[in-house]
Length: 189
Image (cartoon, rainbow, N blue to C red):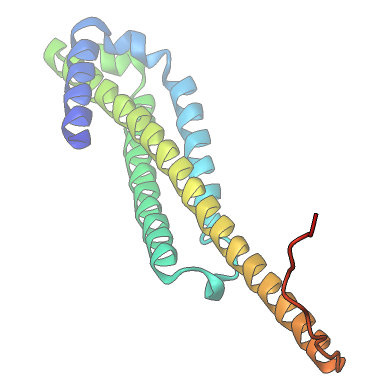
């Protein structure tokens, strides 16, 4: 479903760019687009460098741990995809920049429109994928929170149980004797 929406949005953006944004006008934005895409790529590389979070994994619930590590692996694949998309778009922008505006002006009108549409579609794809991955990253942080909270609760419960057991053993080892107790009696008026 999300892929269909992405493809439809890409197609619509490509059509709008091809129809309404001349390549020569878009050429003026290449420098800003290159800078923005480079920053996005750098941010993705920083995120990829983080890898798996530091955590005492042995004490975590195996099912939750497996779910979290699988989600992190899927997100990492998404990041690699974003880098590839950004790399393709950056390459196109750099190649067009090397041609120069006067050379591009000599291209046929349909080729200029197709190129403008391609750039618009790829820009849209970059924005959509980054938005999706940002949401997925938030989802993984939420999973980490649940896992850490559950593990901390289990550790806390285990510590309290051990403390209670230890106190009970101390009381029993103190040699205290049980005194006989009489059953309750009613008051006589």
